[in-house]
Length: 146
Image 1: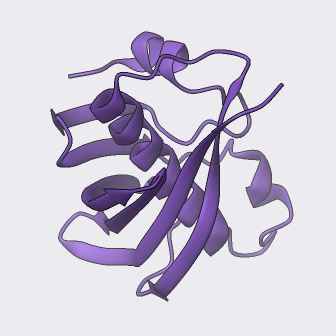
Image 2 (image 1 turned 180 degrees about the horizontal axis):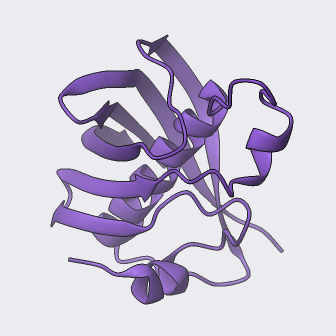
């Protein structure tokens, strides 16, 4: 549905902070399914943890937020520019169910639950295979900066 070249046109994030490799499905204004391949080359594995590399939970939340941003930008027709920023406004009910290790493939499913007054509320789930690795309710907002 969307390859890395299209994602780079839509998100301002770049290495080492771009957490989406591909969009598998996108249902306008409703849901997105995106993919992140986790490799041993990720810079965070150097220190988290050298003896047993595990992806930090906050980066799983960031990956979900980036998928949510792609969904919100698509739903609103907003194009990436230097004046539009997309921020976390809140994270609720975050749960981490299994460690994510090198070689895992994260499949993120994010559903837009509502959008009001520039605040978007999403429910997100990350799976590795059939196992839930992370789930959370995310609130995000778009702002124009000078």
